Image (cartoon, rainbow, N blue to C red; front, side, top):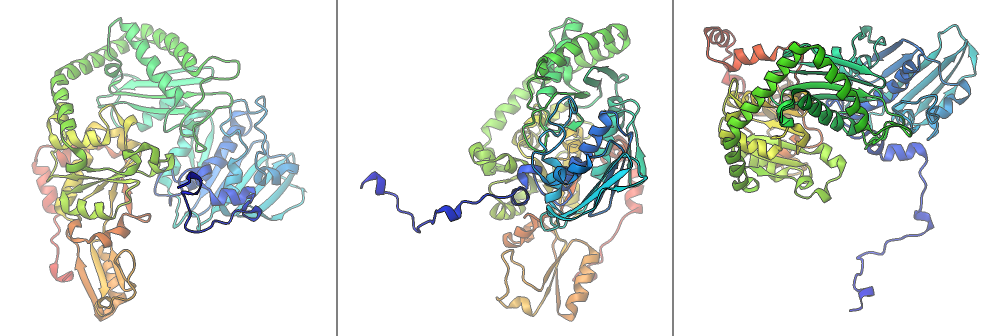
Length: 640
């Protein structure tokens, strides 16, 4: 057969001038929102799109403060709307509409005006406008003001330039489009850390959130103080220079913990600046002590923050979570040399001045070295064992985004999840109906070991955790984490709750940063199924997830009671005591786009050490009394 005629399409695809379209700016953003704000989400994750919209507006306000205009920013947020008022110079009134609705329009292209700003491409606030059903922007400059209102990027109303007694600045209010961000709601637990980071990076800036003020006087030192969940082994080292600030300490915890920023942007994925910092701080400490320490021993237990300013920064995505810039500026040194030169001078000088601190650091490094050498044999055997065990057949059912990197986009990698299930029955149900592109399954055998108070050696000696660590690729820290979301999926009974706590204890003990960075979740699964006993016997009306129009899944007793009242005397109630009892088709809806997840959080005020000691430590009369006092006996007659 002639090569030119070998392939014959089943249908003829029409391809004429009529199929060539040029989308206007707002239509392109609304059709491809991920290109501009990353994932969409509903507000249950700190990196969901609604928080990116808030950040885009805040970045502009903070840039004004960085330029020396306005010391306060007022932020008001309810579940569905946001308003931000800064007291900077205000947008030039004649360009107010252009700034909000014309792509590649802004005042940051001239590096003299916004030399080290975050948003340089003139896209951010336009994306907010296009993705909001209500968008209002008002600018006040020197006694004159102008307001413009939009809906989904379309100009609805604009005012004339009128006199006012208001202070200079810009006011923006927006309501994200509920058709794009489904069932969304803003959460203070994600907004407050965001605002605090702005104050840490801009000492003296006052952020007022729903009437609550946030301000920092000590920059990154305050950041570490407020975020560390373990006590520092020595006073936090705080160093500042032109366009760079660092804070460094160690704690009695495993792994490394970093917070990195560029021009006020929290680079949660790190980048060239963080890589340079880790290399430079290790080399500086190694040279200071004159010992041939391994870098991993030097950084074990290190908690640090680094913030730099870069002229016209280049990020690896529109959401600006990873810095790609190699140079500080057109005429400046590389990022690596800039960070290295600063630490080599300032950190070395500090250690010579503060010899007691240097002594504590030395002891911590030496202890890490001894622990590593003591584990060398165990670690080697554990690695060999993990390689010999066929993870893909016995424990881990992987997803395509990792089985073939070529098939996984960056967006899919951010959406990648691994379900930690108990036993084959639950794991089998999830495996049959999961999204094979982004969802993996790891099946546990029985109850895991209680790791509270044990050494890292046990992590390698215990087969279950050794294989789990290998599956997650956590041996060298969370930088190599293979799945963005680690989801604990256990039964909704006492045993399931116990396994859940044992897994959380494991992560808290050995990989606390995994929880701090928001990677660990608990899957909510229904406790009850309430359905109409008459209509569900019929085959018609069936949905893809195995439910029908008269089936309600309930996640609490309150939901069960409400469902029974709705069904009346025809209610048929099923109590799910294990995930294995839920059919694969039913499970489809529980792990799909609308699955219910509770994020596991870790904050300083949680007092995690005392909590773990009480609940997971040695059995004590106090804990026994607590269990007795809080024992609840389930009344089976209520659920029969």
